[in-house]
Image (cartoon, rainbow, N blue to C red; front, top):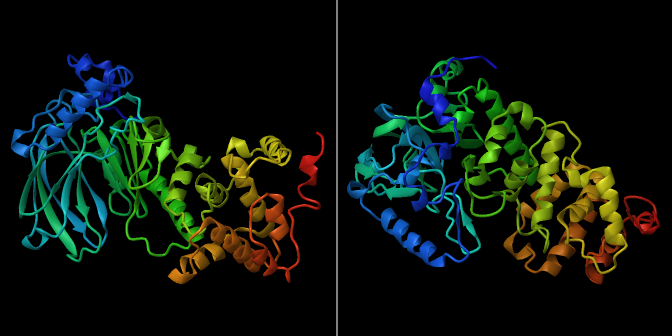
Length: 471
């Protein structure tokens, strides 16, 4: 990594936001002083109404919220406001990164051609769209709602967000306006690297030092929104994005997904709406992943969590049996570990040989246990199929499910189990009925009868007898 001398304000941005002396800290939740819901429901309800009112203000009435400096952050004092023309390919739906940042409370203006008004486009300020209002979230570490989007209904659209944030153009599905040139005024330059478009030397010398507090790394198949502090010394964004493009391509290929219309997107956040990460658009993760998501050395060691969330975006309900949402998703994590990272597919500690033996023994020695009770126990069912038949069988079956006519798709859990048994058995050329029965996965006698002409397959002789024996 090259050693470079950074401007003083960049070093300051790298400090934790709460390290500043914030006069208003008691008025809003922060990482250092989170708000706890228990016993304080009235304040939570009042704050919800306050933020709701704030989010409905017309741009001319918006002022910077004191929490914005804490998160997502404000540009440093003296940062130049600029005008930039961006080109947007409207055949690609969802968010388009502009490399610009709206300062908290300041109006930005987007000017579009006449044909783009009333075409469903929106001007978005902010990447952190997760809402934290749910009563299931007991603590707030940031303001629960901090992004806004404005419909573009005129050739000139003014927008403002009290919390500021990265600026995006949102394109609806099935937009046929071709390439549009859109001019944006009064925004701050942000670090932006676009694979195969941005000059690497210019990135290293200048672009990664742009003053906005959030950066964008844009690949062909995946985009990353992360704190600028994590890219200030990033020399190889091209290699990072090429890695992620390979990951998404691999998951697309395994799932038989051939109709991708837009890249996936990761957004790092101080607090998200559910779990440690969650799928969707964008895929959300906590800030502690910021140091890993663009670190090629770390990525090559495998990132089960990100592979997992991308896997959720590839699951199909037809082959996700009841109770296996958090099981079958890890087929994609294993695939990426093996095919992209060139590592053993059992990359999670729960899948180590010692833990596998313990989990299988615990399951098979407990007749009342369900194979879906524990995600990594259930994953071992699929891992045995991978070991026995390879990835190509899964690929063929996923394509088969993809191409099913509506009338052929399973609609009940029983139908899903029967179809998975029959389709996998026929594709593999083996009778998996006894294997399913060993795992106590219910299937119908009729389904099992249809594959009796095939030779029986088990992962090992007398399976699961070895796991029932005393240690």
